[in-house]
Length: 346
Ligand code: HEC
Ligand code: HEC
Ligand code: HEC
Image 1 (cartoon, protein in one colour):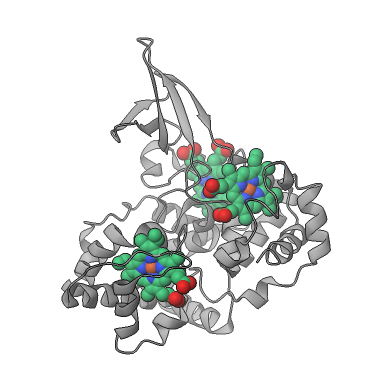
Image 2 (cartoon, helix red, strand yellow):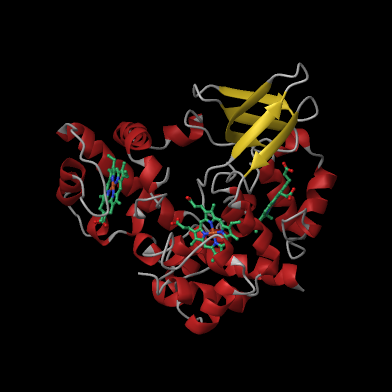
């Protein structure tokens, strides 16, 4: 049935892209003591709920701390049968399910999470801070690509840069087209950024089920004409998009899996929320947090405010939600055909 097809497709895009990463993963799986729950999460859930369970708003709720709010029985039934727009994962059973539930009960990683920081050198930690402040909003928190910047862990420039000089040059000079600003950093600061990016490359290679190794060619198995027809017909994409308007050049801005992820769900798309308080006061702002119990926003001053959902009424406006609605409707072929079509929009 459709849901299983979607689940298997999700498994394919987060699954083994190249034999090497499969081997690395098999080795990890065989190694006792590695966290089977984290692996199951990375394989099945990360694509929607974020690599670190942080959620991808507004479509996908965060799962950090979910066990404090939701009983194990309820979680099990959500994983088995799905919920609302989430597909079920009936194939996650037995020991894997136990491990996954256990993993969902662990504290979410934060910047200060002791275990994590202790493992990296001071230089990497300094680069981490600098990267998060200056680079993450374009290249992603993990350097694996974001809104406008490419995945640095797969960049030929970065991977080929043995001395760090090329990275330093990009950072100091910036890029004109597509745009990256120039930064006035000291040699030491740049060295820490280089160390951080290299550490991310290492993590990305070791991280089971991470977005590794899917080449553009792997995603080019679809039929362009059918993709075009789906885009303008059944898929309803042309209600909001146009190949010659907003999506013109989308395949130059994003490649391969990154493009597939943008198509699947455009992270960072703006969503707004209007909240009516019991007092009658109305507050509107950018949606900043949402789960079953809490609604949070950033108001026009940039202040974060949140309420229990049972105390207020609210309305979320999120046009990109149309993507989530589309999930259960896609077949594997639809996705491959759409990808083939989008990749012609250079
Ligand atoms: C294809 C995307 C997708 C995948 C993959 C996915 N989820 Fe979800 N999940 C969702 C969506 C969307 C919701 C919100 C459901 C709703 O209310 O419509 C959700 C909701 C949940 C909730 C309820 C959270 C809340 O605050 O209400 C839990 C728990 C959950 N998912 C766990 C998981 C686990 C564990 C996995 C991996 C086995 C997983 N999900 C995989 C899309 C996904
Ligand atoms: C406003 C968005 C933005 C910010 C901020 C940004 N970058 Fe970039 N960066 C880009 C874009 C876009 C490219 C691709 C340029 C191209 O394709 O020629 C890029 C390219 C790069 C490259 C070369 C990758 C390649 O394969 O060509 C490196 C290295 C890099 N950025 C590092 C950084 C670092 C380190 C920071 C923070 C100090 C940073 N960037 C901040 C947008 C950004
Ligand atoms: C109800 C409106 C709506 C529909 C229908 C819709 N989208 Fe989107 N789409 C959006 C919004 C909103 C964004 C976020 C744009 C932004 O970030 O500014 C987006 C973003 C995207 C992006 C990323 C564009 C970029 O430059 O980052 C792609 C690719 C995409 N959509 C493809 C599709 C496809 C394929 C379909 C049909 C299956 C579809 N969309 C259906 C509203 C919609």
